[in-house]
Each structure stands twice: as C-alpha cells, then as structure tokens.
Length: 190
Ligand code: ADP
Image (cartoon, rainbow, N blue to C red; front, side, top):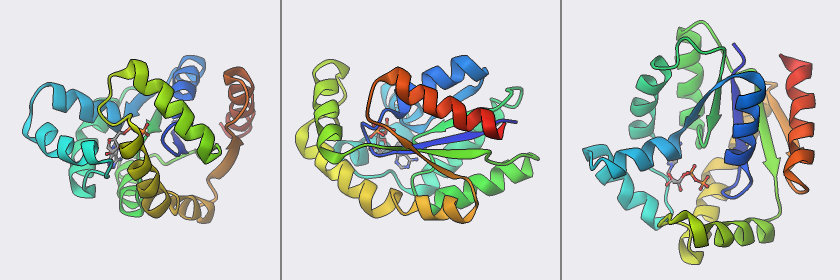
C-alpha cells in the first residue's frame, strides 16, 4: 500500500495537495478535521467534546482521535493506499498509527512536510475564513492553532526523520509547482 502522511502547519495546503495526490494515485483520504466536523454537524457526543477544543484552537485529546481513527481505517481496507491529512498531530498519535498499520500488515511510505512561512499561513487562513464558514478561521483561533502546531505537532518531524520517512517540500509557489515536487518524491518511493 502507498500510505502517505501529509504534514504541515494549518494553512500549509495539506487539503489542496491531498486532493491532487488522491486523484493521481487513486488513494483513500482520511482527514481527521473533516471527520471531526462531520461528528459536530451530526451532534454526536464525540462531536460535542471535540467542538469545545476546536473552537479554542486546541488539539482534541489523543485518545479520542486514536479511537476514532481505528474505525475509519477499517472502512478503507480495500483502498490501494491512504493519505493521512491532519493526522498524526502528536507523537502519541504517530506511535498509535504505526501500531495500527503494522497490525494491518502495512506501514507509512513517506511523510511529506509542506514548509510555508508563518506570515503566509496567517494570510491564507484569514482568506479562507471569509468563505469557509469555519469557526476556527479567525485571527485569535488561528494564533492558538499555530502555537499548538509549534509545540505539539512540529516535533513530529523528528519522529519521522528517525523513521527515515521525512521529506520536506517547499509549500510556497503555485499549486501546480508544489504538486510537481510532491509527485517526484512519491514516484521515487512507491
Ligand atoms: P487545519 O490543519 O487547517 O488547522 P484541520 O481541519 O486539520 O485544520 O483541523 C481542525 C481542528 O480539528 C484542529 O485545530 C484540531 O482542533 C482538531 N483536530 C484535527 N485533527 C486532529 C488530530 N489529529 N488531533 C487533535 N486534534 C485534531
């Protein structure tokens, strides 16, 4: 299986590039942000708990995310591979993902890290906020999300460097230019 982790700060273009990768390589998409937003919309217990964290720009507790993911992963069993978008976001999540994939006889192929300057991230998220209707795309929440990213998520790069899976991608430039760099990396590893 071709299993890809797409990694980067909020606003780095993970969702946009994921869509292009999925089309090109025929992969299943797992976006924990999308799954959580669906839970919120459906008014589930998990959704209610998650909403309180998301609105403050904080990460949802690991155990909730890990429990939620096992079910989602099983629903994609028949896929050629999976792209993980917005997950893992902490070291415990990465460790849990490795165990879950190994139990299913597979592993992460590569982690693509989209590198974008902070000023550009904030501008992109504020622009998105005008149309997305997302309660977390406002300046105050964006700043909290960036702090959470720096403190809890950025250290994951080291984890994947140690695993020999980390590849940095320049995330500035046109969508097509960035996708071209991504394709080169995937084609070299698949
Ligand atoms: P973005 O990467 O653009 O900030 P996402 O849609 O991936 O947005 O996630 C939105 C919010 O959902 C996050 O700020 C966080 O509160 C929560 N969330 C999503 N995925 C996870 C995860 N793997 N672990 C913890 N919280 C998560």
